[in-house]
Length: 517
Image (cartoon, rainbow, N blue to C red):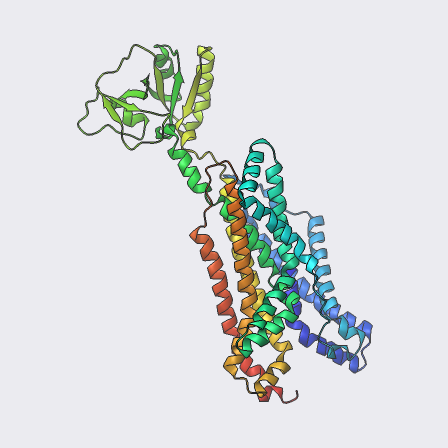
């Protein structure tokens, strides 16, 4: 819908005049309507064809896209003929409806286009209520009393999550609902304290058309606020995953290695293990109070450690699998080997650990505690990688949304220049320099986008910080360099885009181009 609004805004000014001219030379309202519908239909069909071709071209790459190690089924990316017809019908109906709505004034009267200034509805303060309630929830959650209540509820029920989810929804949609009102207030404040005529004129125009100005960048609000909230909350997942592996002593085992731990494993168990085809070799380890002892000759075969240089093969290395990962091991000369014994095995494949568990459980059938830990499982992060995949998608969504917003800004600025040609020419005749006109247009175009983007990012990051602070986890909020790069690059792209189109002001406001005005 945002692209439809962009398209109609760019061509609307000139098309209104053309349709009004058709009415002046005798065209009826029905004839003008048919022309509008035909033009919109042809443009829509071309767009639908381009979109379908792009969809078919991207089907094969999407089948190779993985999320959490899982790919899409080919059937998930295929549409039925009914779905194709529904998509095409909705697209054509929306584009035709938007185009007809924009041109309705030219259909009413041949001179209706002369009143190009639409009546601006008064902004109501009730639009701020959802945003105020949402921000109030997070402000209360930031206080010691709110933090304590939410922390207690998070341990026992879903009440805390429901409250915060309601706050997030109220803030995000409240920003969209109150955007025009806030834009009007900010513009009026800038106009009140303006020290130059350029800022005063630009602020006054933004204040009068605050709803339309905000509508052109409203998509950025949802994308940046939601994306900033989610990324602030989950960007620490990667560090937490790495920390979970480093704090798991069993991750010191090699990938195809498994350890069998029990209180009363038989001494003859090693012979049974060596007879299994899926077991490459095995070794005995001896549980002690501070870890497990194994011979230096076996240490490098089953773990990521090696004994220090100069150690004898018959010496023992002490390694504690129940403690965080260490960089070195402690040597021991003598160990009691006649007591309890555990076993390390090297499997042909990591998936053979299930066969090993079945074998040990079937043969021993012991009532004593016993478990088998796989080195592959210990090295795997305990946190679902899909969370990180969603974070990557959030980065992509923010980047695409900023790109679309910049495109909307550029096209809206071009459309505004065409529509305001007469007023800009009047300003230039009144003595305003061309450089001043460029600064005026740049201020009107960039300030709303930049301010909305920064405000949305700030609110999203703040909500993410509050959300993470009440969770009883070791997850820390993180603002990644990639996040800053995407937001900064999007705003820089907007500045460059506006700078590129500013030279057209000279042509639009030149006396030669306005001889008939």
